Length: 288
Image (spheres, rainbow, N blue to C red):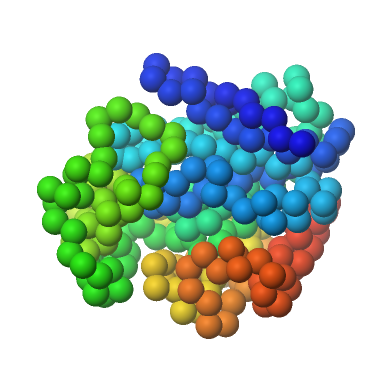
């Protein structure tokens, strides 16, 4: 059964999470949705994945967060930090989670935010990144995307028309045009963070997972299709190699021939195997 609660209240937003509680002392997964920090909603998490995780004995907390560009980039990061804090503190008045066994899982931008939690004061015990990225300062985001430039051009006027001036926690698909504009122009960093990749490089590095790995970084699993047209496969391999070089427990599952959002093809044998490996990774590192 699902219960929906507000995990954070701001001046303009009630930020919600769906909780699938599986009983006392169960380990908990915090799930962070995709959408380039611009669009998306917690409702995107497929039912098949919810049922799979819960049937494996995990309680699940599926969160929303405020979206860019209406919300400051730093405040989006705060929402993720506050969600982890809520699970560890306030949520325990309703749910007897095992708060010493917390995993954070996310896809794409949610994968980026998941990787960023490994650099926070309150780190999860395990991180899983589906086709996420650990380097927002790389050329893949700072230069026009060949894949998106092959699509019909979105001019700035039409892009801006897709967004508003009021903070939101759920972004519809029409906002995708704004993302396409960002990728065609190579301006995601400027548009989403309101910072310049060169002039504000040192500040941006605070939010760049690959620049903030320490020996305390949690065990991390990467899952990525090697034919990803949105987030380069290399974004997982470079994080994986960096963690491995620092002695962090990490694994990389390559989905051969797969594009972005491969996990939504849940019944495919390669994806089924990957989820079995994922759950095994969680159990190994949450219970040792």
